[in-house]
Image (tube, rainbow, N blue to C red; front, side):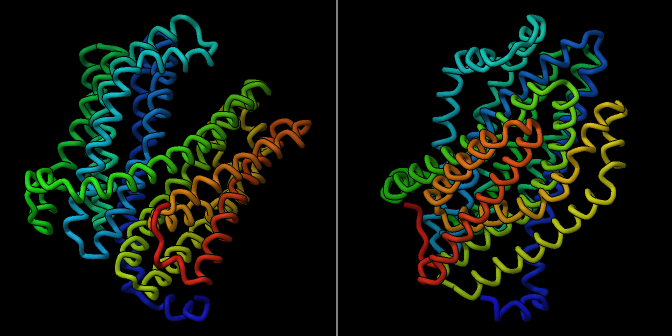
Length: 454
């Protein structure tokens, strides 16, 4: 692979294909933190702080639950991209129907148990009774967006797997713009308070589902030309692929659960070190999140291009896609690290004007400056393995990484918050390194091109 690096640098058609997927997804990702800021600004202007606290707590719980079902997007992207590479229209159609069916099933199960889930989550919170009341109000309403939110994961993955990045971009942007507009109408104009913010999000998710459905319908008619009723009546392709789909989703779900556990521990354990620490960590983690949003765009590009190359059995296209996306990812993360290293103090000052929080955050800027260069490998190799639908490898390496996180924190716990950041750094490093080792081993054996989920 290394001897092909020079021609890849000058292969502008490859770079255009990578950027055609990455840039729209980065742009759509930017709207996610913007939405959070608008929610906070709208609710934050009500007359009591517990309104904002309730929305923050309720939205955090619902986001964590929905985020765990992100495996629907990942598995759909990889399987769709491989089917497209094989030029198998029947399999392309089946992946979409399988994903939508699973999304509906999971959303029904969630709606049946959402009150129980909320009670469990609140058991870990010491929030005031007022905050808990409004968190419950927000959560119970937002729960009804589950069918749309989960089907949107599938539509997003199917469109990305078909090498269409503009449609997912508009799906995400329309969802967030509608949410922002309705927030202003329901909360500021109509004074519906917390329930208004929740209803705005529910309506926005269904608007996103409508937009995504229109794009998928157009692509289906243009590229597939298959009858849904005929596919459902035949059922053979649907049943044959369902067990693979379930195994892949199981593995990615367990992988996501480990990741969420690590991030939750980072937040809750930091809170034990004092208010300034938890506030400083929140500021610094927001920058880590920005890096992940940028890298996600290129990870999405890798997923789609790797899956298609595997479906085509095209080893040169596979290697070119991986190296090209990695070159872009490395370049961008070097830029992030330099910005955090030389301008980190000024960037933190723009986020918080509380002197104690700024001083505390500044003490951990060296960790932030190193993080992009360490974490980029985990983001990019995630894209490679999702495109190859190697969910088992992703699950096992995440188990190893999570164990490394907790072991490092336990060994260096006397360092308190520095131990948390060291553990997070090791966690990211082990994720990337372990996936890299598996990838190199499979590549040398000539097995990666024939990757399938196990």
